[in-house]
Picture 1 (cartoon, rainbow, N blue to C red):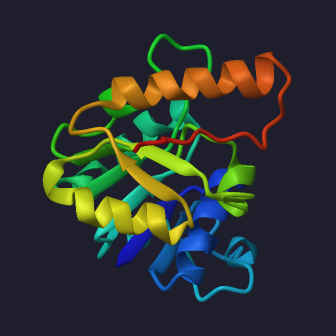
Picture 2: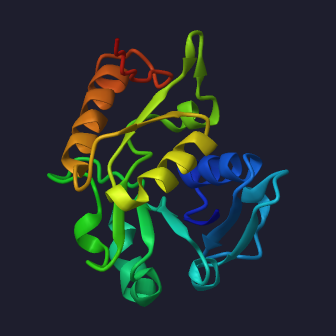
Picture 3: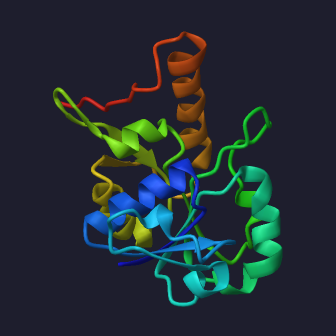
Length: 193
């Protein structure tokens, strides 16, 4: 799958490199396209944001939550009708996700915001991979599961337009990992019969 990762920081870098390593065609969208360090030893490429969005089948938004409005103002037309995975968190805000700042025309998904990046970089625990809970359009579920699986996590679908549940899990993770001091190498797991 052709995936544009918008953002070359900690989360974007980890996700893009993992997806490139698992066989996806990844282009990092960057304000500094000449700096290719984020791709590491993978086949991922780095381009300007507009170029990265040009033929993407899916877009992962991994910029600070406050920067999504600017991204939409500059590139909103290129996002129209595209599967956009919101990996942002607006810490301390009433709503953690950036859905309201994205064009209403995107196929909106919420994922990659409920665990620390360390768990994306090393998703395996003693008894298997961590679970990643996500929401998105039912028609995009298989693509989203392939993306989550490409990072090495077990995909757990919460339904369409359920970013409220995903954001609630983000708050649970923050409470356990950071506020209770259990550490960032903490993940959630669905156990069913």
